[in-house]
Image (cartoon, rainbow, N blue to C red):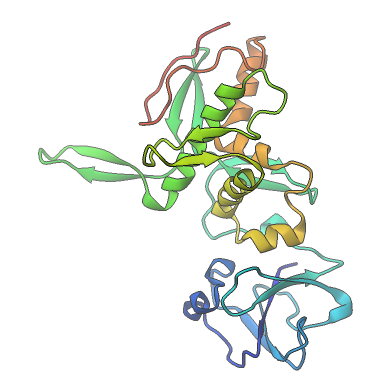
Length: 273
């Protein structure tokens, strides 16, 4: 099993999972990490190397690739064994949301979640909310849905904004770049910008839903090199299902978009070309 390594300069404690937020690594472990003190780390200082799983824990400069984690409060570094980079299964979270497999720049296929899904009923496409939703009981004792759970609310906003962007940009050669789209659940003056940084940030949020990664891990492994990010966001709006539907019905890729905006989980039929 391959995995990522983390180095904490000048740290002498073997940290438990509940202590990881203090050093900015709560996202990186779903259980207590394995720890090993080393006399010299990638920054030249002694410290503690942390790892998950069966990865050999220690600092071996000639065998490993490292980079500093930008903005980490403890000055942490992240690395891996150069001849055995981690695979998607090494970084999976304990609970995965359903999605589409997308090949990223490392050559591996990563499970990118669906937020705003499409289902085909009698040759029609209908919207549905694919993210987990809350359940409650109203004053009359009837079961009700309370919308997307809070931890996925931002992901839902991104999915809606990306679909709006595709709509606005249909027919252009590179949809989703240098474009703004309203963030449906945000205040009116708040907008999601899908320029270079905004596109990467949105794709990272989607990928991090199923994997224990941040900007540093994605950059270290080169996952977004070569323009993979629109495909991650395509998975978020279930674009492969639309492509299959369009191909089946011999429609052009950007013709016959489903009507309605899907902002409240409603469903609409597609206009047939």
